[in-house]
Amino acid sequence: LIRDREGRLQFTKFLESEYSEENILWAVEELHAVDPSDVHLLDTVHEIYSKFVAADSSLAINIDHDTRAEILEHIERPSRNNANVLHIFDKAQAHVYRWEFRHSLGSLCNTSSS
Image (tube, rainbow, N blue to C red):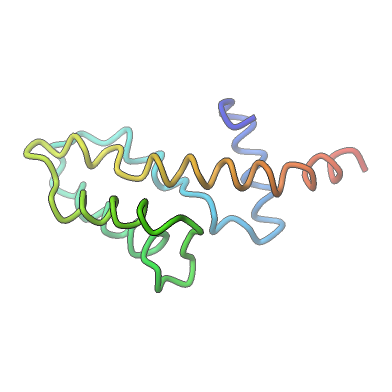
C-alpha cells in the first residue's frame, strides 16, 4: 500500500478523515525532487522540521530522541552540496509510515468493507 502512489493517496485521504494526517511527512516527498543546489532547500527543511519534528510543535510526530537529534544535527551541519539534506527525514518518515500502517490500516480496511 505505502509503496504504491495511489495507495498512499487513498491512505492519506483516510488519515485526513481520521484526523491523523499530521503524522505523515508527505512534505518530505517534495524534498526528493528538489535540486540540492536550490537556494530554498534549507528553508524548506527548516519548515518541515519546525512543523513536524520539533518536539514543541503542535503537529510533532512521535519519533525517538535519537532520530530527532540526528535530524537536527544534519540540519545544523549540512554537507557541502546539501546531498544529505534531501534524505534527512527518511528515517523518521519510515517510522511514521510503519506506525500509521500498523495502527490505521485496520481501520481503513474496516471502513472500506462497510
